[in-house]
Amino acid sequence: MPDYKRHGARYRARRRAVDILFEAETRDIDPVAIVEERAELAKNPANAVAPIADYTRVIIAGAAESLDEIDDSIERFLSENWELHRIPAVDRAILRVATWEILYNDEVEAPISISNAMEMSTEYAGDSASPYIHAVLDDIIQANSAEAPDIVTGHDFDGDDSADTHNIDDTVSTDDTEKEQ
Image (cartoon, rainbow, N blue to C red):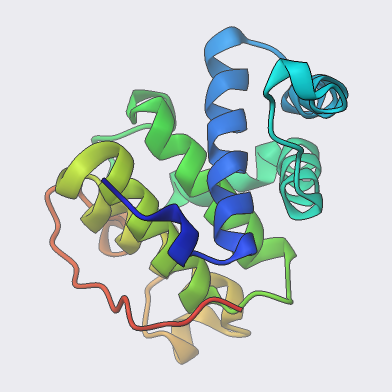
């Protein structure tokens, strides 16, 4: 069983954000509404609902506001045989949280987002999801950080994304040595 106490507050906030995004999609409701509902329930100790961390609120609000851009960024780097709606919902939630951090939160370094996403993907989905989640997030980082993508990263962005997509069967190593901020 994982030891959640060894993780920092931001990891726990990310994990809770993944849980809320997953639940929102499963129940087909607004994730911000879930956060508000939980915050209200947490006010009464008899409900045994943990308070919502500020960073969880920030992630959920940001992801909800930018969901279309986040999903477009993720889909851009999936293999042509995969579409976002075909990926397991928990993997989508992990990708969305990490992608939001990579694209919209300059306070978090991208390797930390990837490391945390990898740990959550292993916890929730086992080892099968980690390689493609890592590959997609790495490509999002490369595309986001490049001023001239075809020169800086060596990727070919002339409309043929075949070289920039990743198959779920791709294998990618991870570096779990990054420390959480």
